[in-house]
Amino acid sequence: MKIKKRDVLKELYHDKVSVSEIRNFKDKIFEKPSTQSRIYDLLMFSKIEKGAWIHGAPWSILAKWRYEGWPQKCPVCNKKVVPEKFGWMVKKIEKEGYKLVHIDCLDKLRKTRNKATWHAKK
Image (tube, rainbow, N blue to C red; front, side, top):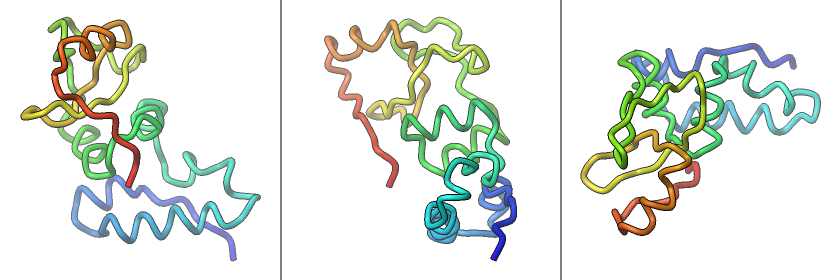
């Protein structure tokens, strides 16, 4: 059975699919060696979405960012983040939620003990 592309973030944002259903679809992709290398294409991820997902952004956050806009400021230095240029990681900041943090700001974030957590995809 051929696996067809699905815009899972669009489906999730418009409440046409659950996170559980997306995980099942992702698992089907990983079942076949022939489709594993095409996972981002089959999920219809942009390069930015791929990067954020790899860094642990949850499905619901990716969908929200795609349709409502990506974070534009680093919560550590308050300087502009340009998602298309990368140089950031996804971090969950206590009381602020998921944010894009400049890679150069990660040490400062750890030192200030801002209670950021490293999140793996669930």
